[in-house]
Image 1 (cartoon, helix red, strand yellow):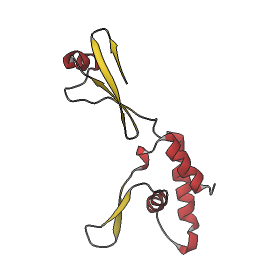
Image 2 (cartoon, one colour):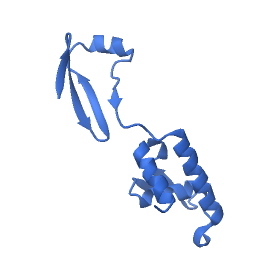
Image 3 (cartoon, helix red, strand yellow):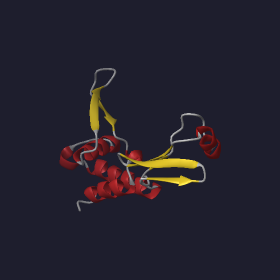
Image 4 (cartoon, helix red, strand yellow):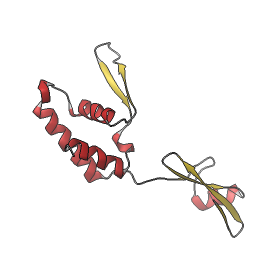
Length: 127
């Protein structure tokens, strides 16, 4: 999809998880309009999870941790990593620097869209 506005020609490109508005002409004018340094990228994507969603997730993870399901004494952080992994969010575990156990790395809940966070909360509620 493309369009022209005054002297500006641009295209909209679909990216994984959003769109990119790509200007094909006067880059100096565009940067000046956006007040952004050279090389900046404007990205339009679905809204991220909300603060209330995040607060609810941590309250639920804390409750799960306190309940010790199946006798598992895990921190809320570890429960989050395990639950996000079970929902197929990219996750990996690396050996700790001291060699004692593993540390979860990868997908962060702050990167979740509102819809993805709603799915995670529904999963936590068993829906």
